[in-house]
Every structure is written in C-alpha cells, then in structure tokens.
Image (cartoon, rainbow, N blue to C red; front, side, top):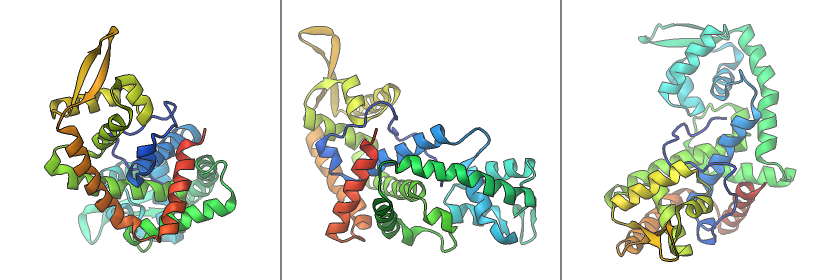
Length: 302
C-alpha cells in the first residue's frame, strides 16, 4: 500500500473531527480526500518502526527472483520516481535488494530481491494486514469485499498490469490511488479559477454553515489549524473569503464569503462533478451509492 505522497493539499488531520458536513458527504472527491487521510493516519499509528510501506510494496514487485529497473517498480506500485530512488537506496543499505547499474540504461539501477528481502517481505506482511484491519474496522467481510470490488472498478484500469496481488487486495492502496488521480485531475481542471481542490471544500462548507470562526471550519473539514490558516489565507488573497471581527466578541474572527465566492464555488463543483464523474461513472447508480455509504462509514468511524 502506498500513500498519495503529496502532503501539500490540505490533507485532513486525523483526530480533529470525523463529522461530515452534509453538503460534503455527498461529494465523492471530498470523501476520497478524507478516506486517504484516514489511511495515512493508520500508517503512522499501526506500522512499527523499521517497517516502510513503500519498501514493502517494492519488495512485492520483486517477488519470484525477478530483476527490474527502479522505474518499472515505481510504475508497478504507483509511487514517484523520487520516492523510489530513496526506497531503493534504503533497501540496498539493509541488504534487502542487490542494486546494480541497469545494463539497458547505465543511468539507472536494476534491483533484485535478496533472500533477506524475501524474509522481510513475509515478516512485514502481518503488519500490513494489521493496517488493513485498522482501516476497515467495523466492516463485515462482505462489506470489505464490496469496497474492494468497487474501488477496483474505479481505479483498476489505471493500475499497471503487473500490480502485485496483495496491493489489489488492499483497501488502503486502492483508496490512495483513487484519491491521487482524482486530486491530480481536479487540480488541473481548477487552474482557470485559480483555486485548488482543498479550497472547494472550504467554500462549500462556508456556504453550508454561514459565517463561522476559522477553528470551527477546521473542525468541519477535519483539517489541522495550520492547514486551515493557509487555506483561508489563499482564499482571502483570491478575494473569495474575508475575516471579520465578531460584533459581540472582538477577539473572535468570523469567515465570510465575498460576492464572487458563490459563482466560483458553483463552477468548481461542476468541474469536480465532471472530473470525479469520469471515474465514478464506471459504476452503476446502485454501486455508486454503495461505495459512497461505505466511504462515509470509513471516514466517520471512531
């Protein structure tokens, strides 16, 4: 399983709130955003020191004694080349892979899993299984299988044909892959509006709640205080949100939407519907409802 690797998108902060604003609970993009954060939090809370999830997936891609280039491994397990370079160096230093210059391209390296690497993969697998149990805690076996099936329908066509079977059976991996692709495509679609996906949730939440303090918006979105400050700063600079002192308590600032905000939010949501719909339309209507219900439960679980 991998995380989406980009942590600069206002990723929700676990432990802040698991409550979903109704308007956002109906948006698949927001649910995948929150679900991806849940996976990231589970990674930090479940995996013991010394167990690297990216290294584990790389070792899976080297099963069977094959020798592969770093680039092909990165593509197979859906991690960036930059991350793969660090992972390969770490695995080599621990003696878990042998790393030599790729004879087909002397600028790159080829990796082969060592016997110690095979043992490490088997040893680490139980920790990854604990991670999966943590993510889907409270789900029945049928519900977990439903989620896997539906996630594969959404993200499967974008995965490498040789993606290791344990990753195809990982709710966490499939959620982070779906979020990564949706976020990337939505980011590109929003460029003309000069906002980012994280800002759309802010605008939608403020339309739903009316003027609220910054800390309350952070709780509503489930993000950290530092993340919400940056997000509101961005929207203030864009001329969409304004901080105003509360009349009854001058120490408290309320966030108010400015006149252009509603139109920008509407356009952004239309773009989001188009971008996310391109993937969600791989499911039938009943399947979409089922996946949305399961994502809400995953995000809202204690």
